[in-house]
Image (tube, rainbow, N blue to C red):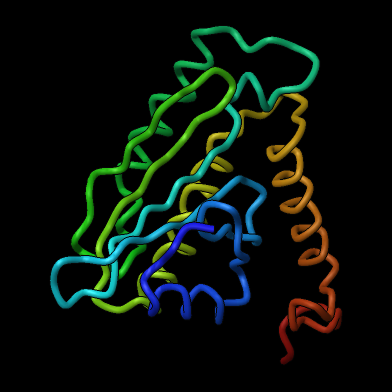
Length: 181
């Protein structure tokens, strides 16, 4: 496993959502491959973080048909523009512009930033990955049958929507119906 600065190693180990991997830590609460690494800085800040999130292109996420290139481009362009705002969910203000790259059937988003505090940097990593996942979900185009991570996201959203509609106890609604008078 890659050696991390001690405060970052401790913060990632203590966080329930991260697990050690060969090349740092991975976030286990996402359907995507999301890896976090960090290096020491030359100043008083705790670390320089690198978060890499990999997910399928639209064509790779669609089952049983090929997405037309014009649709794929029409999906990728706004995705790339939305991901440019990823750091709006982070505490850090010291970051590079997000890098969004296509490689075959994959899209890879690299988010690099520096954090004064390791725990805050780890929380930023989780928030950034969730932002990427949510941005992907916003770009799912109706009318296609999806597979893999996209299908999992849709199934999860449908399940949560059904639970909310039924008023399940899991969401604190208790299933009792409308607002009390």
